[in-house]
Image (cartoon, rainbow, N blue to C red; front, side, top):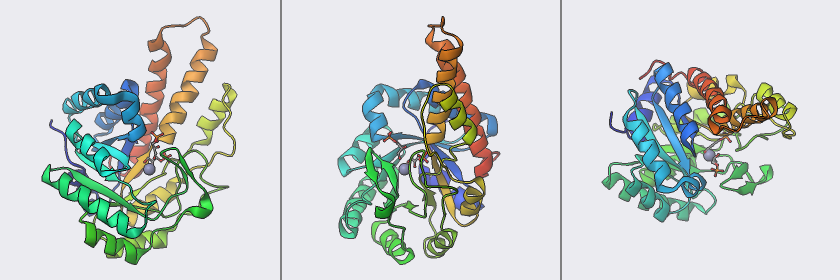
Length: 306
Ligand code: G3H
Ligand code: 13P
Ligand code: ZN
């Protein structure tokens, strides 16, 4: 089926009270895992490519994703994750993306509004949906490290003003999550009251970045197979459920796929020292990612919604 816009998928999710996953890809195997999981669980899905992913895979990666998405029997949106400028968003739209994120959350509010509005006008003219962000997450974002103390939680009144001024379709909010595999000590605190207050003022879909669960089992396997990941922590499943119940409609996951991929790959390499067929090493990693994604889809509540 033809690609779907982000807004088509996410407005149904917000109205229906469920979340939809946006999963980052940068190669064939990750894309296959995402789409196979979506088919298996009958879930709508956003396949996300970051600017780093775009630089890594270029147009061939995007053509590959587009070709595979067109063969899908569930709604699929191709989404630019953390677009840093108007120019990068336009590049993505020209390549065939059906959703772009303009992330000017590190700039001041005026610049964020102006640049977001510029992207919204161009994207909407091309029938493409737009995600914007206000507030600032901690963690690693596009290779920029944001210290926890520099993170700024989204203010509900600013969020309302920002969405009215820009006309963006969905809003990424900072509510306690952060990017990467180290989201804080113990169970990271998620400000559910804040989500509720934002949702009361913004009727459009809300987006949770940095939502990976960072499963202990995967971290232990990764480390047992020669990896070294210290102090790992992720978002508790109950916090994800609760966030969805309060208005989060798009949930971003990248780290969990990276962990599944790398744990599996390290194990395969250690277990089969004589193996040098890449398919024998990457195939199990693809299967592990698919299992993780299917679990995420069931957790978000989008399984069976396609
Ligand atoms: O939000 C960040 C995503 O995990 C993408 O990360 O910029 O390393 O591709 P990346
Ligand atoms: P994680 O690092 O928690 O997977 O978050 C990914 C993300 O927000 C991509 O935009
Ligand atoms: Zn993100």
